[in-house]
Amino acid sequence: MGEQPLLNVSDDMSLGKVEIAPEVIEVITGIAASEVEGISSMRGNFASGVVERFGKKAHSKGVKVELTETGILIDLYVVLNFGVSIPQVAQKLQSNIRQTLKNMTALEIKEVNVHVVGIQMDQDEDMDEKTE
Image 1 (spheres, rainbow, N blue to C red):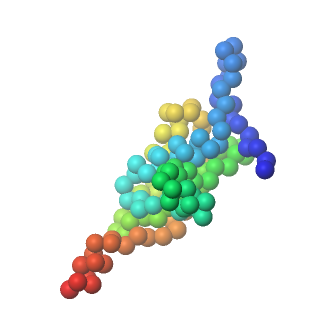
Image 2: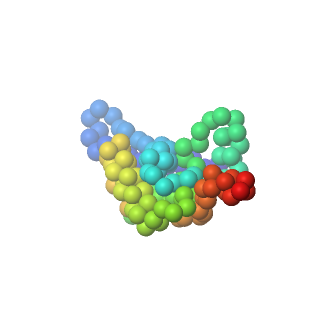
Image 3: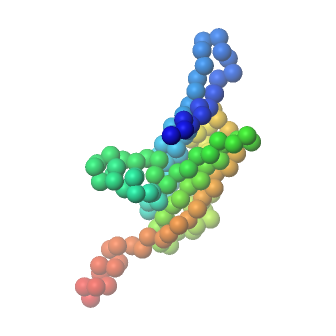
């Protein structure tokens, strides 16, 4: 398994160097995304589903970070709640993630791409319709 490259953060090498692993960016992005209203869940894979069944929260679920020559690309795969404005939620996601990463890591993000992969219908309304 290949090792992911680390991101150099500090230009001043007098005290040593600071490096950030891409997994850290994924976790920060996942937490920042969960703060935005209108998000039902993040799309995960089989491994993140197994991890969550054992009680551990997979904060990087639904987040893909790619390090390129031109910058950092982030792809988010989200399921939104029914009735929310998709463009507004996507814009809030992008700005919250960009601002959180800027505050915590001082890294400039080239792109934050939001992929809406589903809509979650309200569970309570479905239950009410079945009982009537």
